[in-house]
Length: 205
Image (cartoon, rainbow, N blue to C red; front, side, top):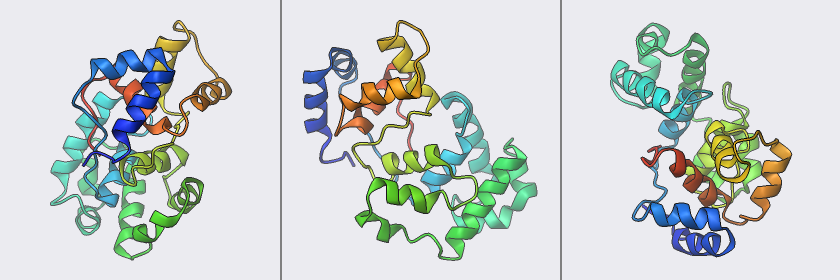
C-alpha cells in the first residue's frame, strides 16, 4: 500500500531540490511499502543493524529459514541454538529473543501508538533491548509510515548525502540535519529516494 501522501511529497521535494528531482525521475513506479507486520519490521531492522543492505538480505533469508514462521512464538521456539544457524551474532540473537518475548507477553501495544508523535513512539521502542533510535526510526518509516523521519545515523543515507551533496566528503550529523530541514515535512520520502540512488531495489520491511 502506497502512503496517501506519497505523490504530494514527491512533487514538493522535486520542486525544492534538483538532486531529489533527478532521483525521483529516475525511479518511477516505485514507492515506500510495508508488510504491515510490526514484529517483522522490528526483527528485520535488528538484523540489518550496522551492516549493508546486501548483507542484511542474506542474513534475513537465513534467519527466515531457521524459524517455522516469522512471528514471536516461532522465534522463541527456535531459541538461541536455532537462530545461530542463520549467521546472526550472539548479540542480535539476544535482541531478537527479547523482542519476541515482549510481543509474546503482550507488552507491545502497537495499535495505541498510532496517536503518538514520532518521539513518543521512539521512547516506547527504545525500552526494548537492542532497539535504539535507528531501529525505532526504521519502524516509524516502514511500519507506521510516518512522513517526516530523518535517520541521520543511517549508513546508506550518509553515503547518499556524501555522494550527491558533499562531493564525496564526510558530512556531520549536524550538517545532515540542517540539509534535511529543507525536506520537511517529507524527510522520510527524501531519505527513501536517496536510498534508491544507491540501491534501486527497495527493501521490503
